[in-house]
Image 1: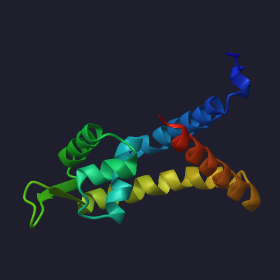
Image 2 (image 1 turned 120 degrees about the horizontal axis):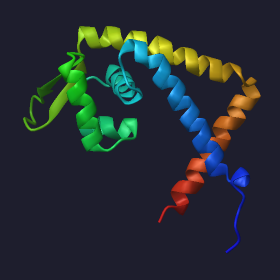
Image 3 (image 1 turned 120 degrees about the vertical axis):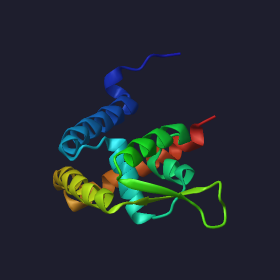
Length: 146
């Protein structure tokens, strides 16, 4: 087996970009009082009111136990409410509260500034190419996964 220099490993470059994005979003979300995971949950809840914790975990790319911790913290701060489903009493529906909506809007404005700055670093063609290239990475890696 031949070795490969770290500088040539695409995975390390992708990881560095992800870490930089996460660190920047962590910093800009701190004044809103949210972690990146909490912000992600609130954004997805805003678009999917009543969603279950399991479905929300899938959307946010975290495990169900991690999502339950995130939701418990958000519920403790009265940013969300969880109520039994009308027909499936063992399923809890999750919705933003008025306060949760306000916190999410503030946090989203902060996160969108980061996303816009990142997008502005590229031309339209470069952005489309990057999205396409990253999509190809995902497709190949999902195919290679044992």
